[in-house]
Image (spheres, rainbow, N blue to C red):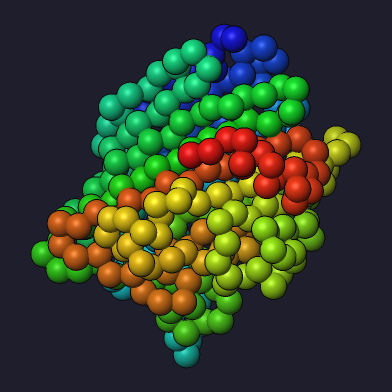
Length: 308
């Protein structure tokens, strides 16, 4: 089988294409964007093998939501998420002096090997004032492209190292006092058509999964413009809650289907995560993008047949 094709528009984006159908599975955009939106790399548009888009970009309600991205909503008093900052007792405030950024520093690998493709990148994390607070090594791997099943998978690995002389505190609006708003870390914004979609976990379904722990969570939505559904599955690597800095600090799911579709395996839903100077926070996730409305049994079988 011919591997995924890679097209690199230097300084702008990398696009990965499935060769048999010519479908662009995603673009990884790393050019800087508006300062108020906390510049950072992101994946958009992400597509199924059937060429249906399953991400949103700069929606009118949250211009800083861009496809699939990894960032921090509350980081030692700064906001690398973008937009307004939640302040307990005052709500969301426009505080541009708290909006930071994540900058592309270079690629170590951009390549296609047989049946998979790899993007490996170095990034730096900055507060509004521009100092170096952290650096990140990020690896995005495309694999398990299966036209018969109508699915493909992406593994996202990030290792964030604290470069300050004091701890970095990862938090969320919930750690600041807002209930059921524990978003931070890896974050997916679904297209507008996916509003009121179906949320599934291994042992439950629906909005009650907000703030709970589980090894995976799936979101199914129905498309506008074309017939049919798509399912996006998010899964934790087994080591996420047990190794490296932050070990023993289990993730909890942030998920909404109203007023928009969003999923995040949050680093700091209920409690802050403290990263000591020089320590590294390492996390790995699997995202499965599939045509059709997958049921719980099919998702569980897929994950069992595609071990880490």
